Structure formats: C-alpha cells, structure tokens
Length: 231
Length: 231
DNA sequence: CCATGTGAACCTTTTCACAGCA
DNA sequence: TGCTGTGAAAAGGTTCACATGG
Image (cartoon, rainbow over all chains, first blue to last red; front, top):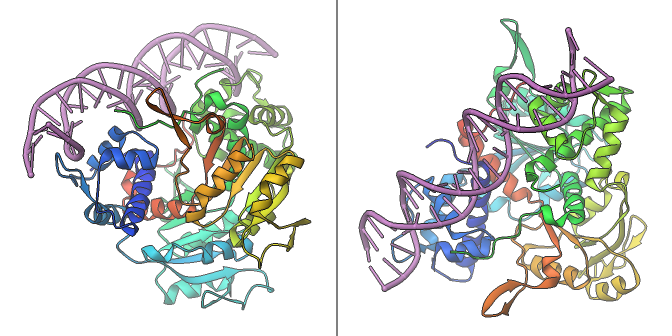
C-alpha cells in the first residue's frame, strides 16, 4: 500500500457518504457506474480508487452497500474513536461543535478552549469552555487525538504549536493561514522538528473557497466540466 | 490563457494572503523563494503558478509586494463586487456571514434566507433574514452573483436548484452533498441543462476534512511531506 | 453474460535546469 | 551577478481496454 493520490481519499469520503444515503434508503446493491453518477466522477475512477485498498465487489454483480460501506469506514479509520479538542469557540468553533454528523463517526469533542472571558465557562455540547492556557494540563489527564483550530488568523500558529506541544496527532485548521512546522538546525540544515514531523495538518479554508469561486465564475472555461457518466 | 491546474488557483489564493500579511508588515519586496517558504511549496511552483498569468517580477530583483498583490487580486477577480446570498442561517450560516475577511474583497452579503420561523425576521449583519420562498422575488429586484448553501444535507440540492433558478453564476456549497446539475434528454442523451452548465459549484466540506484528517493521521506515510524550501 | 479489477496508454502537473534580463 | 521566466524532463494521476471470474 503506497502512493495513493490525495484526491482519491477525498473521493472515498464522498463514496462513503453516498453509501450511507443508499443504506438509509434501504438500497443494498450498487455498482461503480451508479456510484460514479452520484459522486460526479467516472466509473473508471471509482473502481481505481477502490482498487487501491482491496477488492470489495463481485464481478458481474457490483457492490453490496453494507459491505463496501464497512470497508470504507475501516480504510478511512472511522471505526475507532477520535478524541478532539477545539481551540477557538467563537461563532465558527460553536458551529463546528454543533454540526451534526461528526459524532456519527466517533469524533468525540472532549475539550473546548478559548481566550475570551465572555466565552470561557459557557457550556456547549455538555462541555465547559476552558482557557487555552489550561490545555497542557488537560492533555496530561485526557487522551486527545486531534485538534481543530477555529481562532482568528493571527492566533492560528500559536494554537497549532500548543496542540503539537500537547501531543495531538492531527490538526484540522480552519484559519486562513499556512501553519508552519517548527524547524531546527541540524547539521547546518533546517529540518522540521520531530514533534511536528509526526503531526498531520489538514486545512478547511472557506475564504479560499470564496476566492476560488470568484475566479472560476469569471473564468468558467477553466473549470473541468463535471464528467457526465461515461463508459 | 488555457488549462491551468486547479491546484494552482488554490495556491494563488495563498500567495495573495501572504502578500497581504507582508504589506501589513510594511515589507515591500519579496521573491519566489520567500513566498515559497511562507506558502509551504517550492519556489519552482511559485514561479510556474505566476507564469500562467503573466510576468510580474523583475529578474535579479524579485517581486514588489503591492504590484504582485494588485495583479493577483485582478487575476482572481477580486477587484469587483460580488453580491452574495446565503441560504440557511443556522449556526453555520451565521458563522459564515459574520466571518471577518469576506468584505475585504468585495464579497457583499445582500440577502439571507432560511425556512425556520425562529430565524426568519432576525437581523444579522444589518440584513433581515427572509423566507427561502421569497428568493425568486428578491432576485428579480436585486443583482445576485453568488449563493452560499449552509442548509442541512437533505435540503442542499433544493437550495442549489433555487439558486440556479434565481440566476446566480456561482455556488459555494457547505453541505456534505454532491450537488447534481439538472440533466435533460437531448437527442437520446442525458445532457446538463443550459442554466446549470453556466453555474460554477465549489465545495467547502469540513466533515470531509475531518475524515481525510483521520485517514492521514492513521497513514502518515501517505501524506506528501510539506516540502521544505528546496532549490 | 456482466461488472469488477488492473496493467498499460495517455494526459496533466510538478520538477528541473538554464536561458534571459535587470 | 541574482532571480525571474520557461521549455523540456520526470513524476504523478486518470482514462482506457480487456482479462477475470461469479
């Protein structure tokens, strides 16, 4: 298992969502063509994406919804619990904490943090918002796997550093900022520090989304046409 | 001007953000190497990305921050006003409407819509939330360029259809759903309808971000290492 | 016979080396 | 000399045709 396109992972997430919908509609069988149509990609793509991880279908038959779903859940690592803290409980942080669907897949919010005295102490989703400076102490007593950053841009780097110091393994950064791993001199060369090397950073930037949208709306010919079920 | 990688557009957005930060710090000159470092990409990449759109630097010197910024603003279409409506003013919609930074680039919220009687009538950002069914009438009297979808997943497709019917040119979809363009039979072939063909759909899906993060946290070796300033 | 799974062809994107110019 | 701009090479992803097997 090596060298899987990043885009393939995004598509797997989409396939999984579609399988959930099919299951909710009591549809128990599907095919690469059907999935492709619903996901807005080609059937080739679906089969290739799945092939990176195994053989989940039956030739001549297609896929069994619950089986393929179970396999994708396993592949994506969603059959285990992820303990999550959110840094920044302003409007965005609150929207994230309350967004339905996260808990479906074992994402459990275990700690909420902010610096604003007006927010600290509030109860959100059964948790009391704590001061960011209590994060190190909190992580000493609780397992935390992932940290979500929902602070203003100028605080994002510090928040990320705090999360890395706290030992999280993954960061979902909502701030419109490039998080910089801390580097250190080693043999005259700048290298990423060990703590940072072990951390995955994923970004969700909707201001960037707005700007991309503006660009493509002005230059529609540059946007790949959503492939209509070929093959 | 043709055939520019989608990823290049995302990076341009990042470069622009960095230029803003440099300008705020009164730094007036930069280089492909400097930009690369701050953006977490290679200097080759920066130069190639910029080369798609023109020649903005001076050989031997680098780039002048305000000039490059101005050019990127123009390229991305951010020097014009974009009138935006938001469909769905729950927590997420409110977080979006209030997120600072959108108005910096002429994204102007002109209409806010929901179906929930508890939300309709509220004033948010100086606008009164209206019922979605008033959208067609609203667009008859106001220019609307873009629509943002912040409704629950099962309402997203309808919201999108409403926006297309209302004549928006671009949609930013925050719901974890693949928006399906309406198709029609033409010469025995399924084709995307004309209204939909003219619309750009861009997605911002943070549940998907969470799931990608889970996957890469479990499989860190599959994540491309953030390139440390090469060349 | 049918739809999956996959090696190979094709195309796109990134990387690179260096030519071009202040 | 220094850093940009760019054609060419390398890498990476997607598309395809078809072999496989229920």
